[in-house]
Length: 284
Image (cartoon, rainbow, N blue to C red):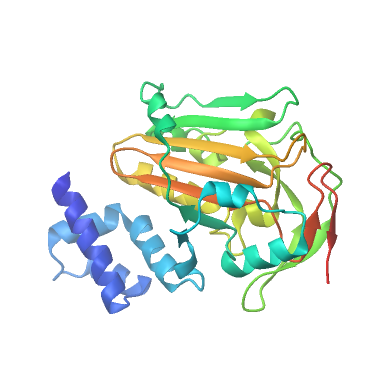
């Protein structure tokens, strides 16, 4: 196992040093001169390698990690102020950031049963936590069988189509609110309303379908697909007082190889949200 990981790390380092693109990797994987061991690892971990290239070439590749900010810092921001939204989008245009942490409480879940999601709600019926220990079955259960929503999450507001500007002139045209999973459908999450929140489209998938909640979901999915290991996955929405809409969500991935804490912002560039009722308006 250690030999496999070492080879994979070596391949990813070469990609980053020599600026290799995904088409070159495809050719390398089938080239008769490529060492068999490396060829096999490339085939088994193609998605992982592809995401490494995508992250390196992304216009936001250098903005996924912020070692200087803590969760407390983001919890104290006023998310109903125009200045906050402008700064967050400028600093984190993919609506997500990985931060350093020292969360020892996560060790309490070492005896969690595999592939048995736990969803928690508070006295207002708001989703407050979703926990699962991912394994291979987690990513297979809903494969090609996407579930349909039969209920709206608590706090669901009147929805309408909008335009949300992203980078390089790209614009999202579609509904402002999504029924956003805490544990994604692709990771075995259900449509239980305790596993759903009203999330902006950009909170759900970012501006390029690889940010927002999608980033840790893709990371977890590809890791489980490529490894015979489990991965603890904990998601927590954060609310101000009795508001029904969360202003941010944290996603924590943890095992003996991975320990990542992400902050995902429930905002949309160019819009102010009333987190008590879900109403929103576009600012100039």
